[in-house]
Amino acid sequence: MARSLRILYRGQQGTIRKNWNWDGVIDLDSAVIVTAAEFTPQFGGLGGGPKTLGRPLLGAANVYVTNIGPHGVAGAEAGGVEFLLHVDWGSPLDVVVTISVLEDIEVFEQA
Image (cartoon, rainbow, N blue to C red):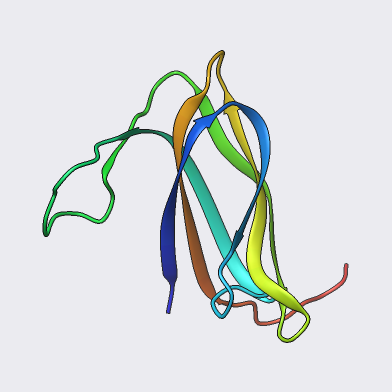
């Protein structure tokens, strides 16, 4: 079963190395997808509304993720994912990142 979470990073600019630990969900064999978008937060009482408090803003800034690397070995290292967040804009922006974890990979091969 796929699992997902969203993280709001405030005031991001340039290329920033990120790490999100999600032990028990992500490990070295996890298939992980990470997406990003500029975001306009809307804090306040949405009681019973959507979980995401705000809306992606599809503006002129290039916001994207590269170098996604799941990590974690039971008993040796916390499970999670590292990635590079790129925010190409002249001033800091709020960005929302969605981390989606699929089922584990089936095979690891060397080519």
